Image (cartoon, rainbow, N blue to C red; front, side):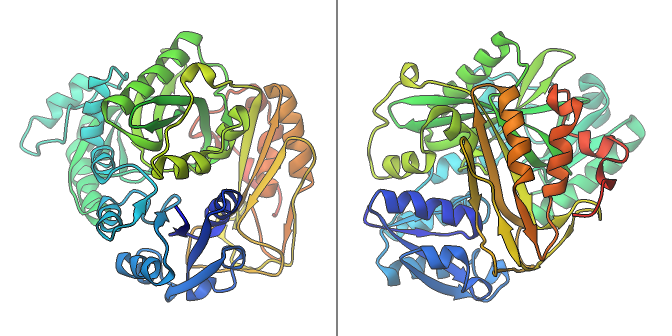
Length: 452
């Protein structure tokens, strides 16, 4: 691999550029007209404007991205996360163009992208799953009978969904068919497939996951993470390892995740996601993400393994060169997502010019940002500015370091979620790991603690 095209923007593009440079790999950033002066464009060895601001005309334009790879002489494409990262058709086009695809095979993407098929694959690999339907619902089936067997409340999910989208909760029999019809219509509009399936709903669930790596011959995990602090099913704070998991469940979650990757012939970095029910002491498969996760730095922090480097090595045909017993999991890490949003005004996006950006430093602190002071946050894309990552030898010390690092991190000129992060990290429930996926929406007054 000599020259890598990054088919993404923002902090993940910057993140990939940095590791590629350390490996002696040239980089090409593709940018929209709105991102001509972005930090990624400045840091890459070269950049190519591939279209106007709307993502559909630039970052999501398959032909434009591949043409940019040809024009620049790039021999590989890294999709980052979001955009085209889990698009099997795009992955196949990259391969058909004679380029290296930094990711799993199109077949793996299709398998895990179909949530009902992925659920079946998980069951075959011995991964625990929630009570639910074995595949996509047949609209002519006895939906009421199926729902009664699973039990209320339950959720109907889009088979082709992901990232918290395409999910509807059903409380009772009366709401069943109407909710299924709405979910099918939403799934068709969002994912071009009306297939949906049922799963038991877990009240006050925690969201946990396992990072896996595979090279076609060896498969390993890099420990687990907890992503339970969310808002509107979008992750806000993540940590590794997941706190408070029973040892037997943790081991089962890790081992079966590796087995799922092995049985699927998975190549590259992937994440197997679970719900944890603290009341029943159960874990259950949600989905497998066939890409790099936003929260990958906390796995890097506790293992010392650069996941982007491993992705590039594996895509180049190299072997992992280590086994599970060679991986040491040490300390505790947190990641805080800093978004250009006003958390005290319904998370209203806050585009505009960044007057100043001060990020913390010191021992065990890492700042992955896609912006610098003086740059403009445009309103066309995801509002993520960057991520603050902290590590220390245990969770208590990592929490203290997080509070210190958040106090030293400031953005002016636009509103950000930093003040919310400071409030969350100080909460007793977070300190004691008693939070859950709907915690932010459930605590009165949490979002009214002052303007950001």
